[in-house]
Image 1 (spheres, rainbow, N blue to C red):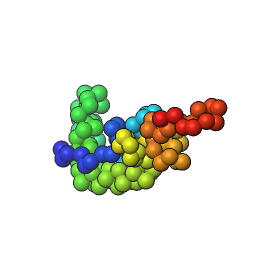
Image 2: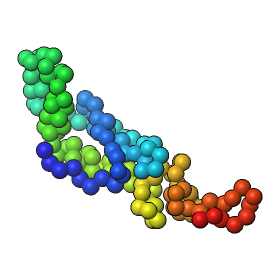
Image 3: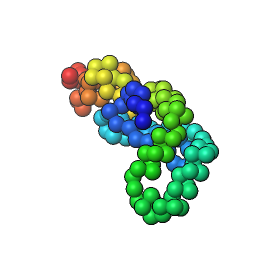
Image 4: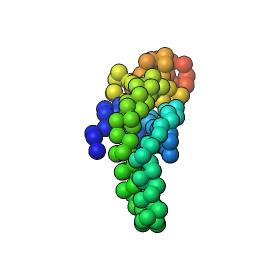
Amino acid sequence: MAEEPFVFTRRHEDASSEGVYQFRFFCDRCGGGWLSPPESFSLGAAERLFREAGQVFGRVMEDAEAPGELRRAAAGPGRERAFQRAVEQGKTQLKKCPGCGQWVCPESCWDAGQGKCRGCAPVAPAGGGGAVP
């Protein structure tokens, strides 16, 4: 199988299901995620081959992890293109901290005022005094 393209977050997963490519990218700080929009596809002949193989080998094929890998391999360039599009979209959904280089979610882990992740941004103490590094 071809090598996966560059991924910007430390962790991601293939959330694709039958006929739909979809990928989840996780915040490097809190582990929250962003799920790419579903992208429909059809494997055509390859899909029929896997279904027929499943009928022939029955439960063995259903329990094995290999069919999922084989299915992704058969999807080949289509899956890789969809993954790359999801990476590019994800880069607009998560924020890259200029301080530490982590990709973080804007909802919980990004300080928009400081333009940094909450780990790198100074935090103002409760008394309203100066910022604490």
